[in-house]
Amino acid sequence: MPRGPSAHVKKIFCKSCELMYASTAGAMEKHAQVHRQNGYVRIGRKKDAQGRATGDYRPEQHLWNHWTGRYYYGSDAKGWRNVLPRDALFTNRAGCEFLRCRKCKTYKILFNHNNRMDRPHDHSESLRISKMVAHESACKPKEKKENQHPKPKRAMKKQVVKS
Ligand SMILES: [Zn+2]
Ligand SMILES: [Zn+2]
Image (cartoon, rainbow, N blue to C red):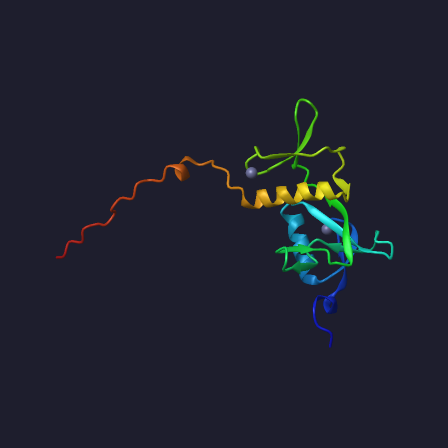
């Protein structure tokens, strides 16, 4: 019996993407979780003989790369589309578009964009998206005063009166 992820690849339909993926159930579950969490969805496709992304659809979470410590499409596939969350884009008064952190709302990455959420794969865009995904997962905005000024610890012990 063959071992490894290729042994478990199935055709799985994603309703959100409206695409039939060829990947593992585990990878597709992680892909579905990104949809549920309104994350950045990156879609790959298997490469043809000319190296173009024309074949089976692959989720970003298809395989784990031990070298980079990240999921990827697999070495026989490459990026095809990046789908941005609707609340990820911020346009300033000058009309420049940015990816904006949805947690702190202050961290921004310049991102020229044509108002389409469904983006053909572009290497420099993918790098910017990766940067924002990394920032958002680590971002802990300061909001609550309680967290900034923790209450002094008080001895709350009640005296036990023995009768
Ligand atoms: Zn999907
Ligand atoms: Zn942030």
